[in-house]
Length: 250
Image 1 (tube, helix red, strand yellow):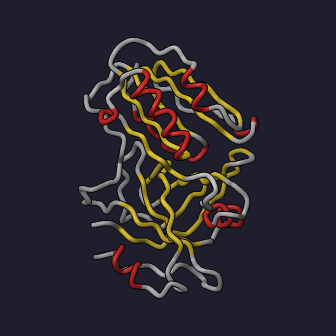
Image 2: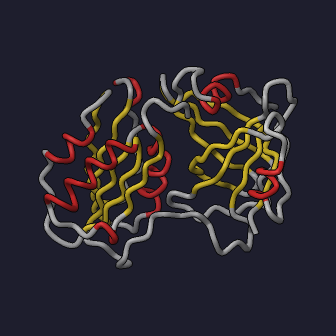
């Protein structure tokens, strides 16, 4: 069964102009599966001191049953890391147009939100990283700023000596930062745009690959079309996740 917790901010770290890492306490009921572990965050409505939490036994049905003006705003995020009751979540900041970005920009120690994630004994942990073979000969990781926490966690989880070709797009040059390099890792950064073009222009190694691609839906679609239609990769053997759509608030 999923865990539904009220999490409290205990630390806020500015990682770059467009990123904050926020540490939350109160998450001992959760157990991250690592890699690209997805969770739901619940944000309070205007005028509320904190989000109203759904019942744990049927959290989605309970959330839907709430009056719309009381129902917390829900968004999907990736856990960056977990250490017992402490969970780190990295937020991509896009101004105040989206509720999650606006919340993160204003977050301070003591701020609260709800988190729905895998419970200690939950067999469904919402991890999408799943190579069809246990040891691909190399990894292709592609994502924009919203995918960086997952990419960093995947890189940390790869076995020693694993080969990875990583393509990351960020809004500003100041957002480029060190990522884990557990093995033979090559990282290509693009600034502002050009992520799909960078993948199309790359020289890939031989051998059996596993691709994990996430970010803006149209860009993910372009990369998937290139890999599967142009290069002949089997789409069912790789992960392609549209994390968000251009023009829609995050």
